[in-house]
Amino acid sequence: HASINRPSWSITSATAEAHHIATMTRAVEPAPDDPSKVVLPTTASHRADAGQAWGTLVHGLLEHAMRHEQATCDDLRRLGLWLTVEEPRLREVLELAVDTVLQVTKASFWIEAKAAPHSVETPFAFAEGKGRILNGVIDLMFERAERHHVIDYKTDLNTRLQADAYSLQLATYGRALKVAGAVPGDLSVAPVRAERT
Image 1: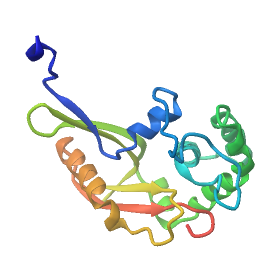
Image 2: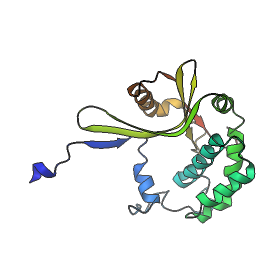
Image 3: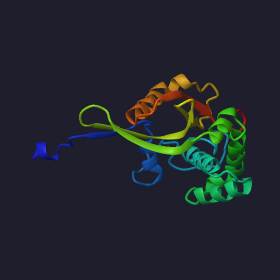
């Protein structure tokens, strides 16, 4: 009985955010000290423009802006209202989220990606050894010189954020591209905060 009920494979996320996503969708109850369990208003000890829910909002707006050539500030604001329907307290920082996205659209990597064949929020899954599947989502991927370049957005508050802190995640994206038959190019992290993008 134990042998039959033992899984023959496992699935692992490249970003280790599965627990946070499950918490946000109420699939699991958050731990009492989990900072992403609710979106709190900005206070002396908390910022509403931080945490998992904030990152999900900004990623959704970035995806829309890259997918739609003529996306306007009003379009982003309307989408933001929809994306915050379950987290209405995030609406107090909606203008900051829209400003953040508008700043990103001026970045050199964004302009280059927009002009090239590109893909946003691209899911992947591949077998990594016997009985183990690794999956994830690439935020932004674009082609240049027959190579696929990857940008991973980070909405963290940490101003000392460095790409090497995410080297394992970026390496996973490179392996996913190779498995799909693509040649990886630059794999990099883009900190996306309105005040320093």
